[in-house]
Length: 273
Image (spheres, rainbow, N blue to C red):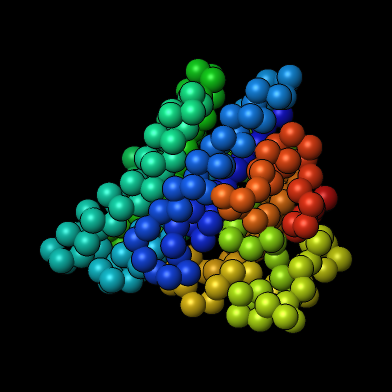
């Protein structure tokens, strides 16, 4: 089985608070879930992890005025700080994996991808091929990459998912968030009236995109929020089921997804063609 996992920035960082803190407990549980699932599965399971970086990316991009390009000396200094901050999130995940005897390797987006005016033009998959061939889990993250028009521009974790899903054709995509799935409205702002949408497919996709929210609208997000995530996902997943679920330090939902292919109380996105 080939599984693409997103450790969402809202789950592994303090994104809703726009503060530069990692949820180290949630990261540790996620990595232990991966380790335990790999031990239990008898097949040759391969995993690629994509890390959201929350405020380490989004807030820095806004703070240093990098959204529309990197041209001035001040922006170049801000770019250097942003790249290091984004990398630190994924490096922590890799270090946590190594601590639990899970072989993982960092893949830095700024060295494998290029864009033009914010649109991807090149995405080198060789580092992923090499890592998987060596029985390692490649870990990539949202960051800024060279841009032929803007100098550098944002390449989100969701863009990496889109590129990887198109190339790798995973059997399953697991998307960890700070809420249980996709809702009819923001479940953090409206906990009493927001309803979980258990399934998204061709019959309700348009309605969901027009009406649903997930996660906190107070968080800084320069990559289009949940609507942008869903739109990018359904364009690239093909027939692979994608599950949006709550990733936290109090449960083993990631293990359930990896072992059973199902997570109770989540949102299944199934765009069968």
